Image (cartoon, rainbow, N blue to C red):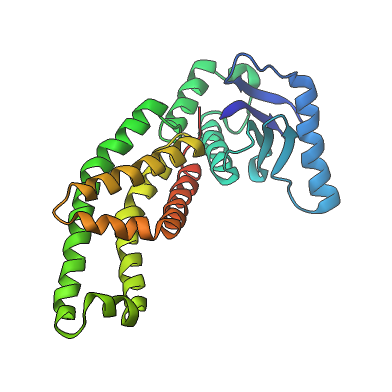
Length: 268
């Protein structure tokens, strides 16, 4: 969540600021001194730029200096926001600011309405949509796709079974004793087919981790139920028999989706 945005010149003069949430107000004078102190100290004492500072209470400061222009961009965001994404957003806004107001950067000539439009244009594709919309959209994608994946899983398994003509050479009991490693591989393949894409979608579109995990578990239960009503209901035992592995794969793909989403979207 983007909470505050600041653009300063090299002398520490505030050129523009915007508060994105009403309930959290900051003293601009104190913050400006804090920003410039960090920037100057890191440049002179450390020889490098400090890019983020943990402010506590679910807040962190992201700094994005534009040294060629003598400008410093700063934003206060939520602690779980991706640093690279926030830095990119700040720099995109500052580039539009530079294009509009360089080289003088006269504070009196900066138009708030124009800056508001610049910010909204930059944030339009970087802000996460309504949680309800995203959850609904994720299920609209995954519901029909899960049926297709189950169909593909069943047919792929039956194809492999018939291609190797396993019934010709061994009994069902011998199948588990002699070809157990092959069955593990086949089961793992089925789990990947059934849970890779849906969990990536849930992770990418869910507004937070808790909702993503709930969606993933619901999807697992729905998949087992769909197997029970499919042409090969016994295939549901592949998932039940490897439930720990299924959960591990599901959560792994889920958090890949969450990680990808955090690099692309800010939460409101």
